[in-house]
Length: 102
Image (tube, rainbow, N blue to C red; front, side, top):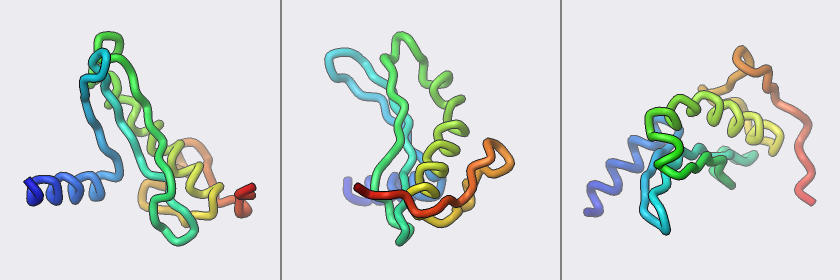
């Protein structure tokens, strides 16, 4: 079980995002991407979640490029450095002055 988890986390790190389906009160599907701080480590996450009966997994996965762009823009505003998923050509996000943390 620990080996499977380690392999799954390595795959998520390589992709830059994760997807999950779970049962709560109703089936929910989610995709998420990390927000990096100035040291490059994840400090938060951006996620899109939806009831599975209203948004099938395949439809949610089509939003991953927008999710990555949003997470990158927030990372840059938070003081992170551009990453390989940097989306300047897609949405115009650029490194900004360090955001206030207050």
